[in-house]
Image (cartoon, rainbow, N blue to C red):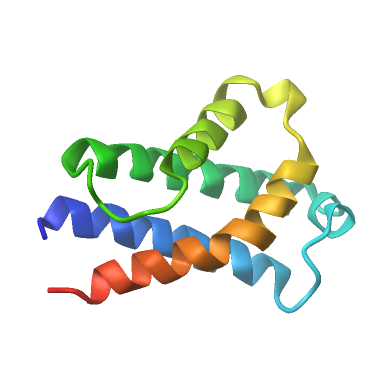
Length: 113
């Protein structure tokens, strides 16, 4: 695995861990997410980074085993370009429903030599 691929995988994992730390055991709800604008913006930024890193990973290795890559990249594009209509429902569902699998896949890839 190339250094660039490892770097992008590490970026994804770092962002997932950071977003998870914002909730620190609290339920991942729209109410909690939107209760602090700084946290909301930090979550949005981390989702953008995850999407951009995933896009770069796919360019380097189109066969990399990461689920839902098009949805990850699409979420990044939506947040970056359609910022005025970002759905907090989608953001909370993404964190709650998709981060666990993505984290597992990225961790496994990083453990491979």
